[in-house]
Every structure is written in structure tokens, then in C-alpha cells.
Image (cartoon, rainbow over all chains, first blue to last red; front, side, top):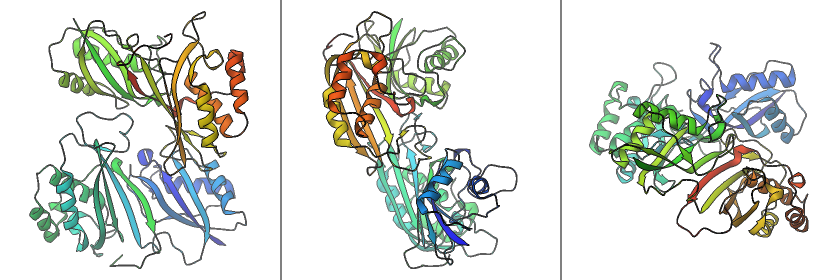
Length: 255
Length: 255
């Protein structure tokens, strides 16, 4: 058996997230396993680096599976894309070491959140942005982003995958920059790993700051209180995209 | 009655084009007239600058209609967007002079065509690009673009709106440039007006040149032969977007 590592792009709009739900709902993992069943005739389990929520997109999700293949890496890409629906694309495939694990070997994750910040909606961006009509201060959001960076207990901003697990995470970078001539904002968030709904909770908080409904001091208090119920409204899934999973760096903090 | 001018963005994927078909098919004009009926209680006719084909998108389509309103231009934008589906957005609205006509006053149209040029498909771009897997030479396409610019009889590259009408058009600019780190190409085509399927026919021809399946001399011959049947396969609708309609310049050539 050989371990295969995939880099995936998908449009999350019509998926109930990455991970198999077992409720007959459409998931990225389910569609990948169905494609592998068609190609190989056997049921193969696929593991992803992160379980993106329903509606969240990916430009660089990573997954792995084990298979008894001898075909070239290029042919794996072609075969999978030929059997996948149009809203999932395999960008890269490669044979990996047996120790490689898409989720547990990952040392960083980079997400990008897109906000349309103008009165009018955008027909061409509607599936990929959060439409915030009230003007946002990029500077105030950048400053609040710096406050949230570092190793913190992010219990206010997300749930662990099971009760009782650590809610400490390391956020390396939160960058806010104008996009599309200033009609949009892109927020890039990079860290070792994230709690459930953590990126969308951070973005929801930054938007409150950008609209002057929350001050920097209050953001610090949100961190300190460590209470999920204190979190501002979370940003909608459709603006979020998992852009990169890193495996090169040193593992930092608690995963 | 006052004449209102609109600038529109739409995702053409689920439309049978801009113009009303009268066959129960969904059109941009039909949805705009339905929104106006909901707002005003009367049937109002909408005219567009160009009838984009089924699947063609717009970032800057222009339309006009006559209405008995006193509300501000900003409120027109808000009212229409509140009654339009998510795949049509009104970007601007303004009261125009009675002589203004979205189609007949237009002096230029700018289209952009997007090509994904790599072996793998793209889940996030699939609705907006033509996926061409074989590598394209940007330089060869640029040179062929220059050959096609100018005032020519474009009978090989499109049909007039009714038989017997002129097929002479003025193409001011055809620019080909890399996009998204070279994985995509953007072709910008600007002219006074275009024949039916003309931009997609020009793009189909440029792609043949970019793949070295057609030489510059043969492109000249295609122009000279003035025979629609000689045209290379036309590019699919989904890569095309009407980005701007101009009203400022001098009218050039035959409309």
C-alpha cells in the first residue's frame, strides 16, 4: 500500500463541509471516496487536514489516503478530476511517506476571509464574500488583529473538537488589506491549528471593531473571559477559504 | 416620466441571456422587469446596451427604463437590489436625459474573456473561465490580436442582428495578458459594437493561434474570406464578461 497526498480546491457552497456526516448529506470527503470507489472498485478512506464547515471553500486543502497503485502522480490528478464533480478539483497529487498524516503532520493553516464592503451587493462575488454594507476601518481592524495574535486561550472564540480538550492555540498572523480597489477587504489568518468556528469568530469580532462597535480594550477582555457565550456574532461561512496547509515548519504550541 | 440609467452586474450562469425570450426562460431583462413591477405595480420595459448570450456574465452592463419617480438615485439602487435575485446586482442608478438610450447612445463596449490554462480544472473558477489544458503562447495570441484590430468586415466572426445588415465593425483593442500567476489568461476586447458571437469567435481564433494550430497569415485569410462557415470553433459563453459600456467617446465606424 502507498500513501497518496492530495491538494484540493473546492467551492463549499453545495457541501455540508469536508467531513463525512453519515446523514446522506453531500461532503467533500464523501465525493472523494465515491471517486476512488469508481476508479479502484474498493472503499478507501480519505483523511483531510481540516474539517471545513458547510459553505467554507478551499484553495489548498490537503488530504491523504492509502492505495495499491503504481501510476504516475500526474495520472492520479487526471483520474480523480475525471471522476469528481465540477466543484472539487485535485490540484496536486504525490506519493508520501507512510508517516505522513494530512491532519496530524500539519504545522500551520492559512485561511482567507473576504468581505464586500459597499452598499451594493455583488452578483459575481455573492457565493464567496460576506456583504457588510456599513463602512469598515481597515486600520482599527489591523490593530485588533495584532492584539489577537500570539499564543492565547481562545475559548471565547471557538470550541475544541471534543469537550475538555485544550483551547490554547498559536495565531501567527492576522492581516487585513483592501482588495478590488477598496470595495472589498481580505483578512488572512495563519496559525498552528484552529478551534471550531474560530476563524469566523475572529472575523466577526474584527468587523465589530471595524464598525467602531467594539474597542481594542474590549477585545482583550473577550480573550481574558474565556467564555464562548461572550463572543460577538460569527461571520458567515461563505466568505471563508482554506488557502494553505503547511507541513514544513516546526510544530508550535498545542495542536 | 423620467429616464433611469442602470449599471448592472450579473452572473450569467443561470440566465438564457440578457434579452427577454418570450419562451418562459429566465432572462436578466425579465427579472429586472419583474422587480420593477413589484416596486411600481406597473409593467415597465427595460432596454439593455447589449444582449449578452446565455451564460455570459456582466460587470458593467447598462440598461434604461422610463418611470414616474421622485426618489433619490441611491434609493433606486437599494429598492431594486431588494427585489432582485442574488445573481443580479444594480451597481449604479441615475436619472438620464430623455435622449439617452442604453444601446443606441453607446459608443464602445469592453469585454473580458478568461481562460484557465493548466492541466487541472478549478472548482472556484469553473463558472467563469474556459478550461484550455494545452499550453497557450501569449505572444502569438497578442500578435494575432493586433492583426484583428481596426475597421474590418468581420462577417467570418459573427452574424449581424438581422440578415443584410452591415458586418463592418471597429475593434479598437485586443489585449492578452497572464492572470493569477500565469495559470490563467485574460483577453480584453474593446470596440464600437460587436456582431453576434463575435467576441467568442475572436477568442476561439486566438486560442487556435496560441496552440500553433493557426498562423497569422491564416487569420488574415479568415478576415478576407468573409464567410461565417470558415470561423474556428467559438469559445464557450461562460468565460465571457461584459465589463464596460462607454458613452463618452465619439461614435466611430458603423454601429
